[in-house]
Structure formats: structure tokens, C-alpha cells
Length: 504
Image 1 (cartoon, helix red, strand yellow):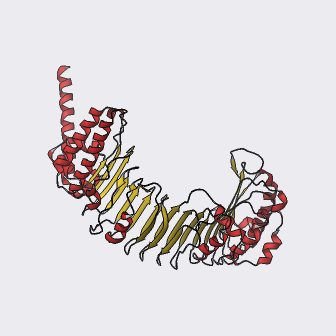
Image 2: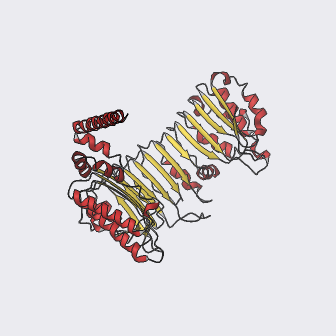
Image 3: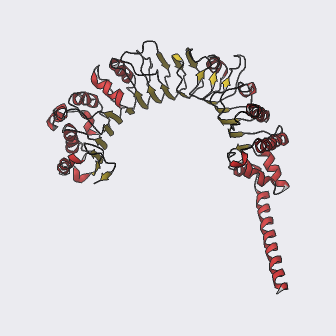
């Protein structure tokens, strides 16, 4: 019995040894760049375990060009001495790498709250900065820093923006101050993303425009000024920039963007509370002749200058215009005449329908708009907007679930009105989604589409329970049997207040 147990143990050990040797043989056969690619998916604690297996593994562990310092949020790091041991290990790791190049460095950290022991928090911040500087010494190319609960403190180490090896920099540290380098300090950055940081002055924008000659992507989110009451004029001008995102920068007074290679612009610029008067103290200027995509959210100022957007393919305009700004809404949309995909939020659509000349958008093949609910005063404006869209392929009309006005305000236009329009949009329509809310105007519009859109493939109609009988009549349309016709009964529409949507 004893001899049998020994033989089993020896056999198991032998099999494990063979498996280990087989694994090591496979690893040694892999090219170094392939092994590094595999290791790039590991976080540092898993990478450390791998480095303890063998000399070959340790060499790969210390030379891997992609590092993920993440996942340090466990309960085991609640005490200062525990965090200190981790910091010592991380510092030691970078010391042994020394000048071994880091291609990608991903570092996420949550600062601990030490209560009254403020000195411990400051020590941890100091170690963070030292750690970042050591990473910069490894000639890092892509640096991603995300630190939560920073609060306030010393500026970001100057070596970060002065680094000659950095090609991509992403900094997410709310409350961290950044001082811009001098204009004589040239950068090789191709991508710069900053969120939550605090600027001392407008020097960063000048540095980006003058010294970042290789930059292709720029993203600035929730950036503030050190002097909270100050505002400034911001100019971003670049011959290499291709993508720009500016969100929640409340200190901007005048914004000017220029770039020959700009293909995408995202702007979320709000001026505080909505006003009944146009914002005459703000201005926006864009000079991007090759712009392909524009996403503009927020407030609207007097006479924004979007320039000539002849290459524009896609536009999403979600503004909050004041009562008197319908003229400027029409001017904005007139600049988007080359757009093929257009999305308008409710406020923009309603301001457009209230007055001003209707823009000619003859190149649009995908249109998504939000209205209040097929009101009588909206129908002629909608007919005018759709009338010139001879290439329209997909139409989505969203509406409010509830309408508090009298029913008579939504019943003035039947199918005969739409027939008289002889609108060009009907001929190329292939897919339509319509949300009905109240009255008969929307139902008549849906009936017109079902009877006259000869190329229609699918139509989805969202309706209230009270409109179910009218949907039965729409099913009898001459086109209904040839297309995919979907009825969605929305229990939240109309006087009933339930949360179930039923597909019929």
C-alpha cells in the first residue's frame, strides 16, 4: 500500500515537471515581441507573479513595454504602512527597469483619506509625483494617469509636459494644477487628453497652438481656471490637429478653432442658466474646411461663425437656444448644408419651427429630430424642412410622451395636406420611426408615409394605448403588407402612467 502511494506521488510530480518544462519550452520559443504583447494584458500584480517563475520570465517582466498599474483598491491597502510597502515595491520595480523603454504606462490610483493626519496624505502625493517622474525617465511614449480624490496641492511635475518621448498623454486628476511650458519648449505629443485639471492662465492654449506641431487629438474636459472668476479668449490653431473635444470649460469668453486637417469637433459649451435674451457676450468661430463630423451641445451665442463646411458628413446639434435665437438656429443649420447625417434635439427643433427661414438641407439622407407632438403650428414647418430633402433615406421623429395642451391643437392636418405638398422626401424613404403623442396629426402623417413611400422597407410607430384603434386602420394601408410594420404601444404615453412597452 505504501509503495503504491509513493509511485502515484512520483508519477504526479513527473507529470507536473513535464507540464512545466513544456510550458517553459513554449514560452522560450515565442518571439519577445509576441510574449510582450501577451503580458500587456496583465495588471502589475499578475505580472509580478509571472516574473517569479524563471529567469526568462523575470527578463520579460522587467522589459515588457506595456504596464498597467491598476487594481489597488482592496481593503488590504487601508493602512498607511500597507500602502507604503506597495509604493516601495513600485519604486523598486522602476529602479530595476531604469532606462528600459516603456511604450505604454497605465496608472490608476485612489488617494486615501487619513483624516486629521494630513501629513500622510501629502507624503502619498509626494510619492505619486516621484513615481510619475521615474516613469518619465523610462522614456514612456503613452502615459495614462488617473488619480481620484486629489483635492488640491502642488502642480503636476513639469517633466510630464516637457518630456520629449511622450506621444500620448491622458491626465484625469480633478483639482490638479498644470503650468504650461514655455513656447520655446517643443513637444512630440500626438494626443493630449486633460480632465479635471486647473489652469494657471491661458498659456496652455498658446503652447498647444505654437509648440505642439505633431498633435492630432486634443480633448479638454471640465478644465477650470485657478482664478474662478476669470474668463479668457481661447484660440486653438493647429495645422496637424484632426480631432478636438471641448467640454464644460465655463471660463471661455470667445472661442476660435482653426485647423486644415480637423475632421471631428465636439463642443459642449454652456453659459449657465438659460436666458430669454441672446448671449451677445460670447462668440464661436470655426475655420475647418475639411471637417467631417460636428457635435455641438450647449448654449447658443449671437451669430456663431462656423465657416464653410463643404466636407461635413455628420452633424449633431443639441443646443439650448433662448426665445429670441430662432434666427441664429436657422443660420447654424444653413452652414450644415453638405451634411448627410443630421440629429437635432427638441430645443433646437422647436426654435427652428418657431420662425426664421427654413434652411435647405438637400444632402441629408438620415434625419433624427425631436418635437413636442405634431402640433398644428409645427406641421407646416416640418413640411417645409422635409420638403427639400430629396435624398432622405432614414427618418426618425421623436416626440414627448405627454402633451398638456388641448387635443384640438393636434388635429388640423389630414393626409390631404401632405399630398398637396408634393414633398420630395417621400420618394427615397426606406426606414421610418415615428413617436405619436396626441391628436390625429401624427397618425395622418404616418398614413401618408405608408400610402406613398414606394421604397419603404420598415416603419416603426410608437403610440399610446388610446391610439390602438387607429393603428388597426393603419394596418390596412396598401403598403402595409409589403414592408416590416412594427407597432409599439407605450404605456407611458397618454393619461395612463405605467412603465411597460408592448410590441405588437
